[in-house]
Image 1 (cartoon, rainbow over the protein chains, first blue to last red):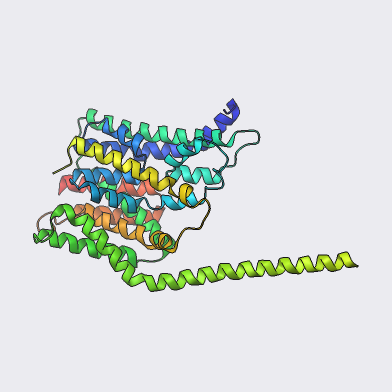
Image 2 (image 1 turned 180 degrees about the vertical axis):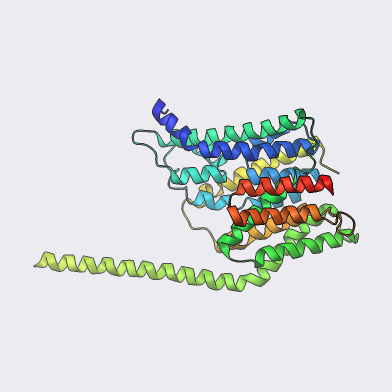
Length: 266
Length: 108
């Protein structure tokens, strides 16, 4: 358990996430109600799934009547980044007890960002400190999405078009990724294969519920064909660099050991 | 046809389980050893491809051959991109683009 001042400190850390989650939770709730689902599905999804982009996508997929396998495949690839979040937290979570499992569940983009950057105050229990941060972020998200869903049922205003927030969110995510990777081949591939799948579906060749699955499989195949050689070369270079650094480190170590030994002899 | 409430609920449970497995995966598997190259490949190239696929998928029901020729979506996306390059604030870009889209959708 945390004492009062550490508890308050943990909550203060989550304030930016409070505003962010309320702000993106509300359009999610609105979209869900706009797609003719009951308001309480919003908190249910926020409790069980707890994923920002993942829940936005889910609304689009549910509204389009996408089959379960395609939904899971799309979610798998959209959320694959979470595998890498865990990698950098393995040592931080090693000795904090059972709360670890809750933290794994609650590892959203924002909570990940907070947990990797906070330092636990002296004398505070690390598990309880991390747990408090993760719990509050979760509550903000549940609150934001529920508020949005209730607003959608109460306000007598036509929210037609609010689902465009989903498209806009993807556009923003894509811009950020291109900025970071400076690589437009993967998104261009994605655009081309999806346009092909949609055209095939309009021509009556491909059933419309298979557009997403076909586009993802085709895109994966195309990228592997186009990029596996480059990736292998880069990966090899990276491994060699690491190996070189390790040998260099070993050599310096041996040298210092030798010098120490010489000095001891004197 | 949208998914029924029951189908949506089942999909939510499955997706929730999938997300937990993804988030727990590195703690369960890579506590002792390094991740293999295929995971690095996926991390490097796949997310931006999938997001591009989802953007186009969001636009799949637009008819570009008849009025309003998909203009609200095109201008909404252009506005989102412009705002994001200008202000680099995700909230501003998403809300700005959506509001423009809703207005255009209403008047066109």
